[in-house]
Length: 169
Image 1: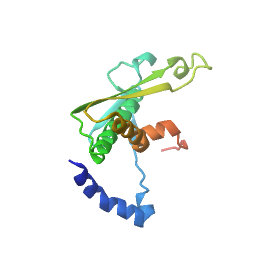
Image 2 (image 1 turned 180 degrees about the vertical axis):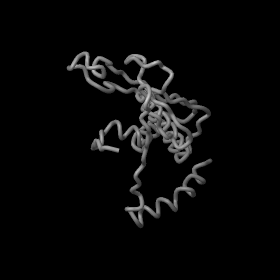
Image 3 (image 1 turned 90 degrees about the vertical axis):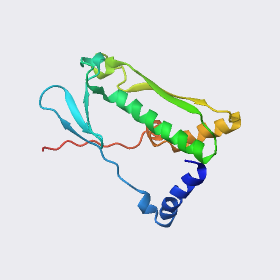
Image 4 (image 1 turned 120 degrees about the vertical axis):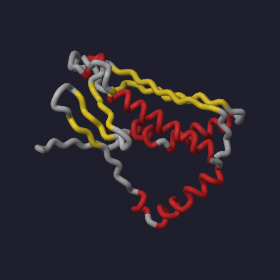
């Protein structure tokens, strides 16, 4: 896909959202089933079921997916798609590219070993390695726009309002 095809594909969508801003508000949903046996939750991914469990650092077997890994994988997926879309829109040719994310956790917080230890990622690092002949100013623009338009990155960075509820089934 080139920039002309991308713009043509997105033009009617953008026009619709300009004409009717409420049409741009969509609620994404995720669902999972807590398993009766074991410490797992089966998450519907839209393509298959993913079974999440405890990370080995908290007693898990390592056979199930770790939700922290899944968060980083979602960041890599979103950032990779966003970078490619922005590169396409800016006519920046990429011969190849890799995206990686890593995050630091102190599992003492998660396990309640140390009440002062934080629960969650203390730091997340996102990295892009691209094979391109584009000049540095174009790459700077590519990174700036990728950061701006990556939904998962912006969600992590800006910490949206989150609510929690518990109800009887």
